[in-house]
Image 1 (cartoon, rainbow, N blue to C red):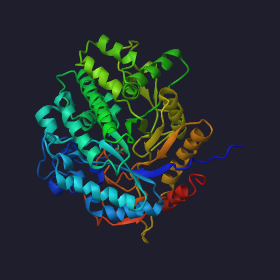
Image 2 (image 1 turned 180 degrees about the horizontal axis):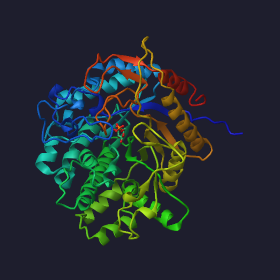
Image 3 (image 1 turned 60 degrees about the vertical axis):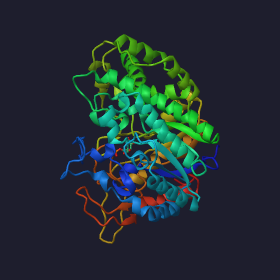
Image 4 (image 1 turned 90 degrees about the horizontal axis):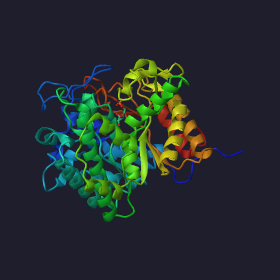
Length: 478
Ligand code: BGP
């Protein structure tokens, strides 16, 4: 009987993003990012993207959980859980407040020097995302975000600045968070957060998405190339939101449709890992009559800047039924999504499918033959603080345990090469999709509500002790 154990050196940790926890949105010369112009939404109430910061509106990312001033205390708690790594992002606007400056902002660079030093003090390896929904808002306003080729240079300048400054402090990098999310090209929020596009419904958003995505892919490949020159030991990965697509039945039309939706969503990492566009994407763009600016030189860059590993978030799977969409293979397959009757849902209607994570790990291994890194996974839930201050969150433990059981099978039984596991929002933070504080993922509770009230005090939930034990036993005791 094979022993169900994770490999030695497995990177256990937790994940966050700068804009969702740092707060201090104007400290140390920081500029305004796209996250700073997003109002608070709610469950099923989308966040509004305002034209600049409008006084009187509620912008939850401005203060967040004030990690900027609490990071020493928070990293100490991560160390207490036994973290081997900590995934966060570098807020682009701390380094280049407007995005198009020639020189970086020293105060911002210094903040991350101190943060990484603090991590290393406890033997915690920083895992860094360069762009996690934090594009300088000035680049959106003045250049139209990644619809503009010039923004490639701004991103690469930012990446190179970080690589040079932190070359001895950071080994693991990712270029863009969930770069594939913009495949939902009619979703205002996802388009703005990922590529800095403000949707204009008079235009063909889909054509614009392919253009912006291409420039991001070139920017990512250039960053990989430059990074390797600065430190050949860097491990630079992609970061995608991998959502397996299942057919509603064994009906061939359902199966083909599931494959088609997968092709429309999950091609970004194909380009980043293989160095070229999959044939189905080239054919689709052509048939739709899009004419993205893709030069021969770009294609060389894509080949030269392939990634070292596949970082991905996993929250849910989805199901499609051919009965829901016209039998035209250019029809939008996202309209064919139906509920999965075999899985439960979170309070925010996210389908909970632990087995899908084992499927994802196998699928990505077969597709890329590269190491994988689960850099997000978790359950957003409402927590209750008891009178004695304790927080009992068995639902969170249950979710993570079931997912980790599947991960362990993939690693031990299926031979998947997995670098690590960093559950999302290891400390409560502002939800990206809703702007809520009450959609909590953390092992550590932060006293703050959706209206911004609270002491910001940190406390350990029951799941804190559970995860501590998981790490201590290297995943043997889930
Ligand atoms: C991912 C993002 C994260 C994070 C997470 C949970 O898509 O990379 O930034 O927020 O989803 O989403 P939410 O905060 O909307 O619950």
